[in-house]
Amino acid sequence: MASMSALRHRLDAVSARELGRGARDAVRGFFDTPYAWILVAYVLIRLSGFYGVEQVSYPDTHGYFEVMNHPVWSTDFLAGGRPWTVPLLWKVLPDGDIWRARGQFGLSLVCWPLLAWAVARCLRPGLMRYLGFGAVLVFSMSFPIIRWDVVMLSESVSLSLTALVFAAWLELIRLPRPAMVIGVIAATLVWVFTRDSNGIMTLLVVPLVLIWAWRPGALGRGWALGLAGGLFAIFLVSFLATTTDAAKVRRNERPVLHVIGRRVLITPDEEAYFRKHGMPAPPPRVIAQRRSLAGIADGELPSDPATDRFIDWSVQHGRSALAQYLLRHPLKAFKQTFRNRQRLLAGVTVGYTAPNARRLLPQPIDNVAYPRGSQDVWFWLVVVCVGAIAAWRFLGAQRFWLVPGVALLLQVPHAVVVYQGDTLEIPRHAVLVAVMSRLSLLLLALFAIDQIVNWKLGRSGRMYDGPASAHP
Image (tube, rainbow, N blue to C red; front, side):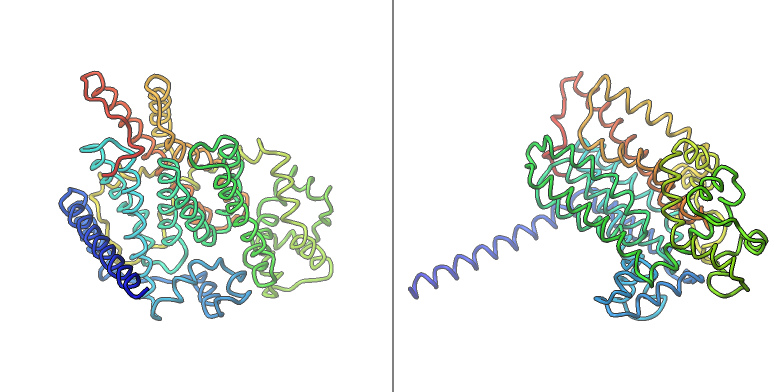
């Protein structure tokens, strides 16, 4: 028995040495490729734009601090006034805005290269992979993205985790395997708890995964159903997290009071629908102070019994009435949202920027990497989608095209949820709509170009079999 135990220990030691040698060889191999030099250049450029930039806070920052100061397993942390992902990141970092900014910056330096790596693995080996890898990193250096790293709000973390979710889905669809099911669920969990609207996007993905479970292929039906169940569970938990007393005020009541006061009461058909479903007639104080209903509810402004009854109904039934109205009038909701596409797609151009923030890319390159206006996005939407559809129709497409394709389609309900869910700071709340739309178009363009390159090389007898099992 002693000799068997010694032999087992010897074999374990040999296996450990081989594993370590394999890891070292993989690292050396990586640094012998252009990826390493692109990545080093990327990190140095990003550092040049981050070092010395002033951190900035805003009134909403205090809400994240309040949640951060509660114990991690408490209801006030997990279902408090703000979703818990940003407070959790800040909680594990040393105290101070400089450390919080460094944490957000570090997360960005991890997530965007992971997405670039996942995109490269979907492309033809060689130049196309290097171009795809670099294109994603250049996109992530555009000013509308890097500006958030020093801002003490949720945007920087949300954008970084969006890149991580894209990367996880690309890897899962490119080469389905159980490990990536777990990866997608884990990435989605922390992503959903950066913004409540992300939970709605996750719910909309569940039916698509159930279709996949019907014909799961190599992944297996059990894992596909597990993925659908995990995503639905994340949505359900995120919804329940907004129903506690601590969460209702900031995450439910104030937004719906803004919507009722600033939109419903000046839109006759919406007001008629709400009145039909129980909303009291707005008393004189509500009419006069309709833009400040949240201030009345918080006791910051005077009230009266009729106003209290109106506000009580609004906070108890306003969200459900709004949801029913949107579901029963989808065309009206879409038209109203579409008319405000500039606010949703242009992103934040004023405010929410450090006084000494620096651009990393020259202005012309920055504008190409991240088109600014909604008209620019519309132009590239037409060009890229027509090109991608033509490539798919005549040359075929890879299954991972579904990731940017579905993400792009989901930005329609995403925009509706963001626009209809509140009336304040819509451009900031729509940052993910703006970034995900542009990012999806970039990935679709890369995949379509790659397909055309494969076709061209195929005609010359150098056809590439496909990226599904290849590694850069």
